[in-house]
Length: 181
Figure 1: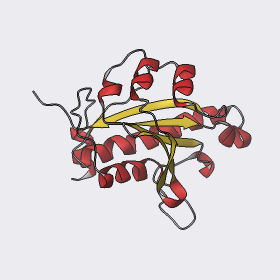
Figure 2 (figure 1 turned 180 degrees about the vertical axis):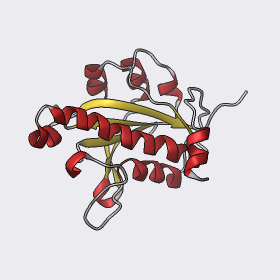
Figure 3 (figure 1 turned 60 degrees about the vertical axis):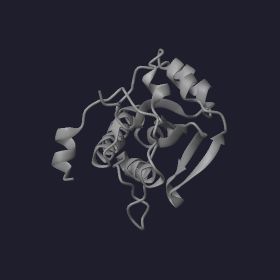
Figure 4 (figure 1 turned 30 degrees about the horizontal axis):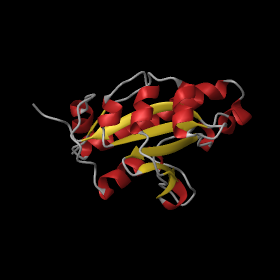
């Protein structure tokens, strides 16, 4: 599929079947978001000053995992299925709990504001937009469905995922195979 086709076909989907993305598909989604693309450590999504303030998590039935870009791996941070608490923290948007996986971006603002001051907050939000668009287009190219979610209680999401105090949740992307008819 060309980039143009992925852009034209991408739609927000809120109805998923329970069949999760396979290992290859999940790997591609994570790589598209924050994967290393050069020997210098540059990533798939641009970042202001290459500060890379984003931390990426994957929530699924098997628990919560943090993506490790340096070795393209996942580290389990919680064994419990947190999709329902995540949906509750997102004002009860039940499709988050129904999606087989959700990617959650958290920001460590200090990584960017230490260089750019308060303007760095804007840059972090731009960074997550780049990374999220990569995920949505990669999902489309893989035949998966996704939906951007920004409506959530930040503190409730941080509590549900037990995020470190320096990480603030800024974006949720439920992903799966679209329920048809």
